[in-house]
Structure formats: structure tokens, C-alpha cells
Length: 365
View 1 (cartoon, rainbow, N blue to C red):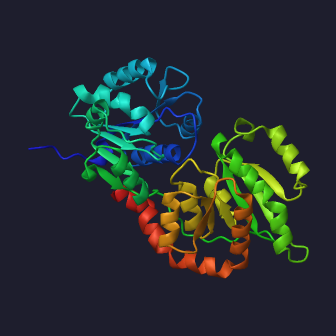
View 2 (tube, helix red, strand yellow; view 1 turned 90 degrees about the vertical axis):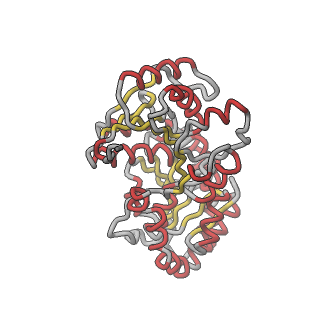
View 3 (cartoon, rainbow, N blue to C red; view 1 turned 135 degrees about the vertical axis):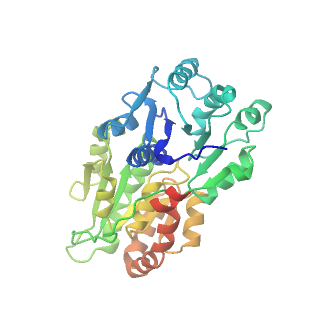
């Protein structure tokens, strides 16, 4: 008779040697938190000094460090040897790998350990179909693939040679609070964005170029809209601060644009009336769903996943073409002019979003 496994007995190795900070990395930290809170034993395998390591350090999450500085996405002998050591030295009940970039080595290492379950979670575009013999052979070792949305699941099924029964949509796993609709305290509207990676810099420039024409078009007396660039770390780590300050000065935006460094995304989004996402390279963003759950309309770079969500739930948000400042301006202006319509849509769809992307649903899945 097989022994019943309880979640609070599990020791799980979370593999994410990423040097970026986005939806996937935040999901790793949240999963570690949840497992530890219910009595389990999470261990995070990451790069020392990376954004995910710094975040884990704040909460004293157990970590094992990759011995190198950056994992080569094609083949990395250091990663292979080091990960083999970590897995052999400790007894884990589950291996949970985040990102396609790091899973191939894990699959190979676990071929001799068929009793050890391997879970894969990823959030990226796939530019090719993985159908070579070696790729098919390695992917057979993955027991479960977790995706954040139906469109990412479709990407998996069209690009990876895996059984559809292995692929599950789990949502964003966002904790929903009681005070989900806190209005901003600013006289005008607060329009904000979150800069987390270098890949978002071009969309940040588009954000800056929309400000003056937007304020000129929706100006109501002396009330001006306020624009905030939030960053989860020192902004100099992501963008050339001198170049950014120079552009803000050239566009005459010093009194309108505020740069705020904060690690509290929830508190930052609460302060906004409109959230502009810069995350084009992510098919799915947890911060966008978080903003919708706080009943803020969202403008996001155009991807299939976002179009699918906004087509299903009209008026909770919209998309814009990458770096297109004119389209961005027009759609923000539309949000401000038709504020009541968007507020009603967000209220009407709150329960649907909560059911699909709340923490309870994620835990159950």
C-alpha cells in the first residue's frame, strides 16, 4: 500500500538560477513562502547576489547557490556538476524547475532517479518546436508542466512533445485582500508603471513620451495627472540613470514624473489609477492581474495571452503595440475619459479574476 504524502512533509528543491526579476521569479519566492508556511521544507537553488537571492534573503528562505556567475542556456558543465552535487547531497521529495532554459540538465540528471517527481513552470515565448530525438527523450522525464494561462498552455502543446494531461493551468496565484479598491489620494489621476528588467527600457521611453500630450489633451483646469516609475531595486541597476534624468529634463517632465524605489508591489499598485505594464517579453504578468484585482485598468504590451484575457473580459484593460507611444497615449486618454465604464467592468469581473488567479485556486491546483 502506498504511503499517503502530506504537503507539510515535503522537501522541495526549487531551481531558478535566473539573473532577472519578473513573474516567474516572484512565483518561485511565493511558492517557497507557501511551502514553508504549511510546514514544508523549501530549498531555493539560485545565483548568489541575483535579484531572486536578495528577495529570498529578506525572508531567510533556505538557499543553495550555483557555483558559477551565469548559467549558459545551451550547455553549462559547471551547472551540471553543481546541480548533481546539490541533488545527491540532500533528500528531496520533489524537484520544481522554473524556466525551459534550466530544465534540460535537470531532466538528464533525473533519468537515473525515476522515483523523484519533476515539475516544470515557465513563462516565455517559444521560438521553435522541440521535436528532436534528444529533446523528446529529455522532456519525457518532466512529470507535470504548470502554466499561468490558457494561451501559454496552448504554446506548450503546440511546441513541446508532451502529453496534454501533463499540462495544467494554475493562474497567477495572487493573494486577494479585503481592501481591493483603494482610491489614490492625488487630485488628478496617478498613472504608474513598474520597471523590473532591462528588456523593459524601450517601453519605458514610450511611457515618458506620452505624458505631455496626454496632460494637454485631458487637462482640467490646474489639475495635472501624476506619473510614477516604480522600481523594485536601485533603478541604476536597470537603466542609465543619467540618461533617464536627461530625457525627463528634455521633455520638461520634472514636475510630473516621480521615480520611486520600492519592493512592495502591492502598495505601489494601490496608489495608481491606471497601470501601464512594460513587460513585453513575458507572455503573462502577475503584476497586471494584481492591478486588475485592485480594480485598476491595465494597459499592456500586445501578446496573445493578454488579448485573450481582455477579449474575454472587456474593458478591464487593453493592449498597445511595442514602443508605440501614440497608441499608448490614446488608450490612456480613453481610460480617463471613460473611467466609469472601466470601473464597472472591473467590479463586475472581480470574482471571475479572483477565482482564476487568486491564491486559493493556485493552492488547490
